[in-house]
Amino acid sequence: MLTVITGGSKCGKSSIAEEILSRKSGKKIYIATMEPYCEEAHAAIERHRKMRFGKGFETVEKYTDIHEIDIPDRCGVLLECACNLMANEMFSAGEKEPVTKIIKGIDKLTKRASEVIVVTNSVGEDGIEYPAETMDYIKNMGLLNCALSERADRVIEAVYGIPVMLKGSLWQ
Image (tube, rainbow, N blue to C red; front, top):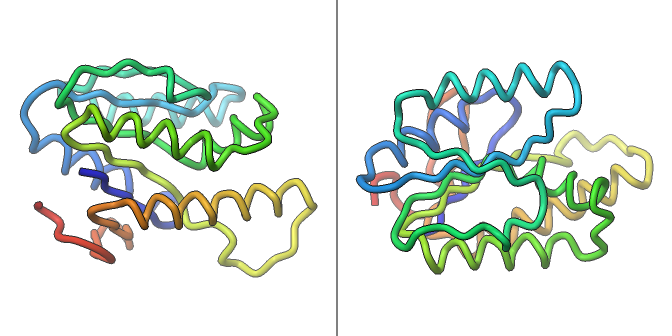
């Protein structure tokens, strides 16, 4: 099962994702994609570590190349987050086809896991014209989010911490 959780910044996406996966038995893998490149990143990483403390998650830090992750069969996976992964693939790794590469990685995870939850952000909704590099990122995130949502069994938008179902059922 593939679940996509989207929404704006700091709207409860991670809490909803962790709650869903916490209800599952068995091994739980948390794929952390945020590279700790500055003080703010370190603070966000620490906040997320505290949030999932005691919930039985095994953390795998993987900033690019998620297709290389070897997970146990039938485990639960939470990928946090697609936006960081896209930025890392585009700007750190210089990937020319980041959407294709990320989708292949997520497809591989979904074949092995009983449940994969991908946290992503709503981007490009503000209508502001940014520099070309940022606009390319926004375009790729839109393509990725569309491809993920098309594949997903359920799509949830987090609105002020409330899960709003866009596709599927919350407790499938």
